[in-house]
Amino acid sequence: MTDRKAELAANLAQVEERIASACAAAGRKREEVTLIVVTKTYPASDVRILHQLGVRHVAENRDQDAAPKATACADLSLTWHFVGQLQTNKVRSVIGYADVVQSVDRARLVTALSAAAVRGERELGCLIQVALDAESGERGERGGVAPDGVAELAAAIGAAPGLRLDGLMTVAPLAGEFAGRQRAAFDRLMEISSRLRAGHPAANMVSAGMSGDLEDAVAAGATHVRVGTAVLGVRPRLG
Figure 1 (cartoon, rainbow, N blue to C red):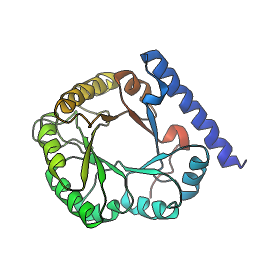
Figure 2 (cartoon, helix red, strand yellow):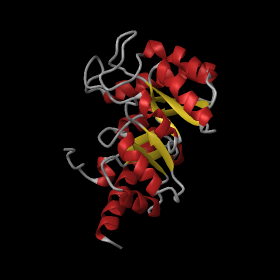
Figure 3 (cartoon, rainbow, N blue to C red):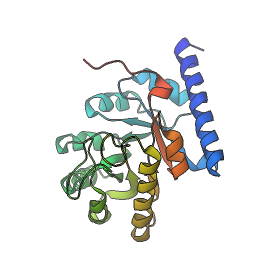
Figure 4 (cartoon, helix red, strand yellow):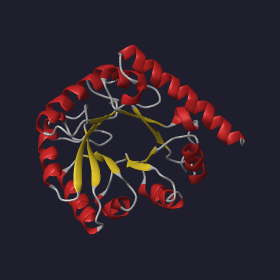
């Protein structure tokens, strides 16, 4: 086993133990929570090692990094999640590899994704990114739609050819009433998810929690956690 594979295997085991313990504490089954490894800034070789170690869901947040990496790993059975703020001019490229876009936060993006999905004869899973730090009608500091905009966006995705409404995503906010209160933020997301599922029963995916707060997300009921640093190590600084 190479040094890097051994390092990633050890890190994965620690994260797995954290998720399993969080599930046990919350009275949930381990299989109710899917681990997505965020591989941004790390090479395709790491993605290949992760696949060897059993990882099947990976995430990227920049198309210029993700597209070549996905191409290099096209022979692997992986589900690719796009989790970054997405500009409409990158949509056509993202449709080429992403199975799920977790950062849908405006109607214009829905229109662009739908057109690209139809053109590429794809069905794309979509999560609405909820900004818990945004006032009505505004977008969040790190992207996302204000909670009162979720229903309208859900209706747009539900009616858009080539798109599938899978659920909600959030990033614990750095400002506003939920700053530093991750568990409260994730509980709020679950309330919004419950309302969404009343009209869209299949939209039951809830993506929340990262390396530092995955336990809070699991306790609140998240179905997916996005973990980068705890698996891959501290990220190299981008120049």
